Image 1 (tube, helix red, strand yellow):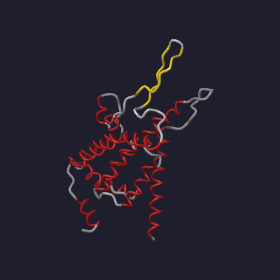
Image 2 (spheres, one colour):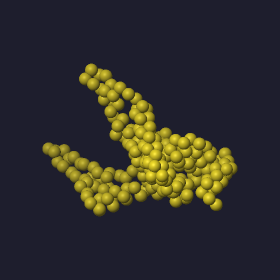
Image 3 (cartoon, helix red, strand yellow):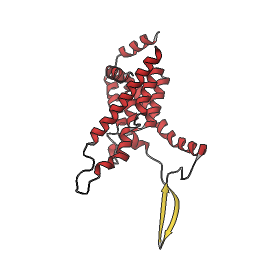
Image 4 (cartoon, helix red, strand yellow):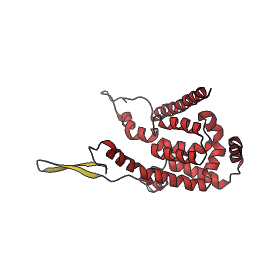
Length: 231
């Protein structure tokens, strides 16, 4: 069966209501809308993924006060291949958890529903099928999770080599913009001038919109480059 026929057969596959429910839950799970320390945080990928504990890296005594400095389990001052290996270990739980969850959602038909619903949107917008929706959403919150899901889609034949290049360009432009922006950039919007006015007179939503437009633009530049290279 040719690639076009296989794609057509996949798009014509009947999708039940359970698949759409699975897709909705998957979007909520990877989008970060339930990120919280409250009970509903159990429905969020990043919250369930958790984080490593902190370790004491140094202890200093200042007068009669003892002060401690904390670092992650990699410690401080690492370098070379050994430090790179330790960094890779920090990615393993995220990648394994993301792959496990996408396998569950796929079992319940989320990818079939995404392909059916969102291919008419994602294909003209980015040149990728709707089945890449969950990887796209995950990549906005976790670069590692998005990369793992993209690799799984490639291995399953959902994405071609050309589509992977376009999609990877989308993901790597501004990285996981939602998580990174809110964790490091949102502080800028709390700053005020000497007169008490807001130092950055624009909204968070506008900044995120600019980042997303930049990701879409980068993906389409890659599409044009691949078209030109094929000629």
